[in-house]
Image (cartoon, rainbow, N blue to C red; front, side):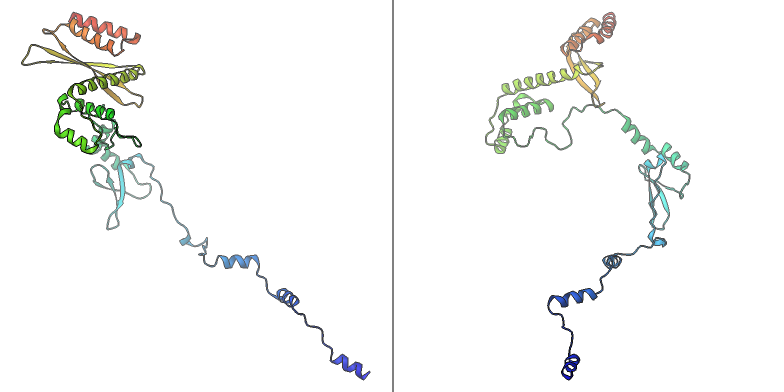
Length: 299
């Protein structure tokens, strides 16, 4: 018995070892809840309290009056707000929210700069007979090589646009500059330049005929000139129409010499030949043409 008691007093439960120790430790550790994890994750972000005034950002009210398209609201150095006219730069008083804009409307109605701007915007644009001022070269096509045929077309265009003589292509400096720009350049004669100009004119004329086929109405204006040093008169016929983009276009359809002294029948015949050459003589023009020819014949 003594030996048993001694064994009992000395007995101690076996201590866990290895993986058992890790399981017991993890069982007694505090596991954070989802709310606590969210708080930790958002610790670096500012907390916005809905009841605080600082958390409310008021949006600027949009001005609904049409008069504000002609004015800009600015704040001066002393903190006073003014309405500045976009055209004459005059500063006018402006009230707070819901203030009257009658004085701004009166200024817009009487502002000379504003009226000039509106008149320029409403004025219909006409075709410019000069090269585009956009700075883009219409002859350059990316990815294409040099072509002498294209160069001849450019020279013909320059001759007609600037009204230069055909002998321009035989100018030594122009030839040297062209050869410097591209050694493959081959000079042309004045006869070749003349034929190139005529070919370019016919191509443009055929293109314009196709445009006229899509136009419903064409207005014709006629101007007469009398030479001061010779017995001759000249007549130019101009066609006006609105294209697909609602732009007013005009083209010189004919410039012919009228024998002096001019007669109504001669002018009528010149107009008839011009309209027929451009294919404008169609059914919808017949009545107008007959009345016009009869009137000019009796003149």
